[in-house]
Length: 162
Image (cartoon, helix red, strand yellow):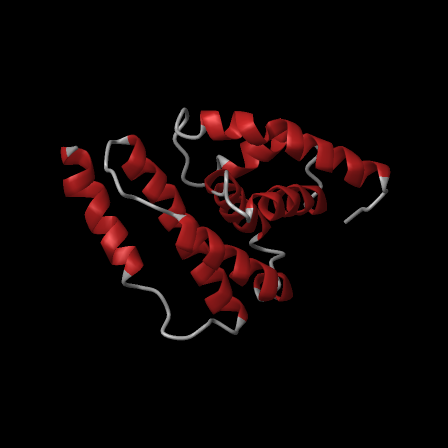
């Protein structure tokens, strides 16, 4: 618990305080806000695993979906595609049991497919290039693996290519 109080909480509070005053509208601010929300989701999961109760991500899961579905796709992500995949992947893992869950699974699979990634393991390898702690998301990954692969298979059958 000391790790959370002395290391993680100050980082979380700093990141929470850095949000924009208005909805981001230009490319760099969309990428920055999307990455900030992904990091918040990641750190909130870490806080829960370390025993901090009352840590909810529902607001940020919804906010990320809104940002990604309305603005982020209009942004040129060509240099930041792996970052976008990591953020949406973390959002997917945190969306379990919410009304946004289906959107996240489908969007994550489509983003991976569009990047030329063909498997769950390759997707995991890509997202693990960003903040990741082995074992932290294992249960969540197990819950989404089959649905993700089914969507990837359907994308391949439909011959939807990048």
